[in-house]
Image 1 (cartoon, rainbow over the protein chains, first blue to last red):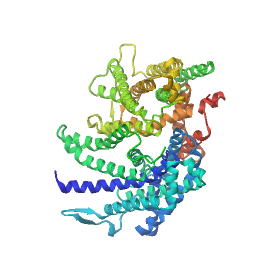
Image 2: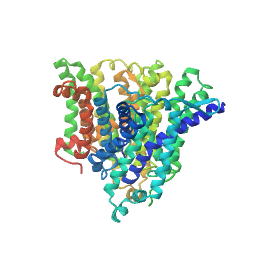
Image 3: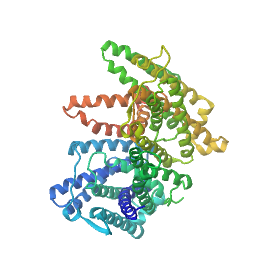
Image 4: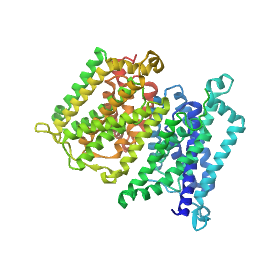
Length: 307
Length: 319
């Protein structure tokens, strides 16, 4: 097997993995601390991507557009938490699933009204659209490297926030025992709102990073949302570390599966059938991984919740 | 089911029975075609209610059995086996097997893990459907309706309508009997307090798995009927949003009541069909954006409409 191809796909997998991590990080915090199943998290990915595409258009600068889109997504996160989600914390998971499903429908259609049904393509500035030869003989897109760097940077800073700061201490306290944290005088409501908006911002950032790679369109976050859920289940609900490890695992499995499963299937099927079946079956791999993890370790790889 | 609930169930089924003559009188043949779809989804919703409302199992992958049933019919039809006497028993078998395997693994988990693992299995089968190039892959494929012996003719829309109605009525009755049997009581016991049921000595795992499988089979038959109705199968039947929609039908109609899912399926699909027209009437040109209204309506139903349409109809709440 071609080692250069393998290395290149591993980088692609890493890039997909860190993108998943950006989405899963917020989801796992919200899930772990507030015990809220938020299906609308994928909508925040979409909102972030739309904000970025629009603001880049207005300002004419890629970097400035992204910088402005981040607080905008943060604000949307605040509003969603205060208006809808706050009332859902005390409900059971079924109600949460349904209400946030309603939110998805609302957001998709709102985006369609505001931006129209046609997909947007936010181009890349010149300094990001080139290639560098980090693997000899295989030029790799600079933008994908940037995504990897941003993802790893967010992971590192999240780790520092959670492990070293007072806010992080409160987050950990909330994740391991909400009632106790509340009884000790932590303003849980404020903490919830902040954590949710922070998670929303990360999700939006993922959308901004994906925008130039794919297209910005209504419903773009949903396939990723389901994957992000799988990732946090594999990693253990509420665990940032688990989300990180599981994201990279899922990203690599999916990307490498997409490339090598068709090759593998060609041994049994004709070329055309193998090329269709391979990528589709590669997407099954992640779910198989999740089912396997749940059978062996029902609490995920790195369970965060104590007691 | 109380006496009143039985009466409402009969009334709803009678209303369904009246649709074709009314549609004929109004010269709106589309109406009975549309109501066939409503009844098929009502079957799926009733089957989900059996495990969701009575068994307390929040399965977020129920549409997968629609797909399994539909693909069983579709694949057989694709290979020239159009006989319903082969297709339907096989659809029962495949959907039952799928539910047995999925249930056997999922029921070991609980809470949100159960929601997610059922979703994961549904996604697996969804992508499996996408990967079946021979059977249309992502696009799906057109198929023939099932063939039966002489008097039964699925191509006759009117006959097909009453076959679906009879199936629905049968399943509602069946679920009613199940819920009130010893088995059903035990199943409801596991919903209220799993640990206590175990302590009393019930093999709760087996009870729940049996319930899960029965629901899967019922939904599989709905899938076989759906394939016949649309003369088409595609992975879209198994998409996770479809599972969400079936769940919404149950909640909208009234969870834990056997009539509720019927009302919910009708309410959901009628809204989906006519809300665009209504919005167009109110604000011309906005019909295509009906979901911007439908989403918040859904949230409000979840937040404030405890008991769903059934409670609205009877003024009662679920005990």
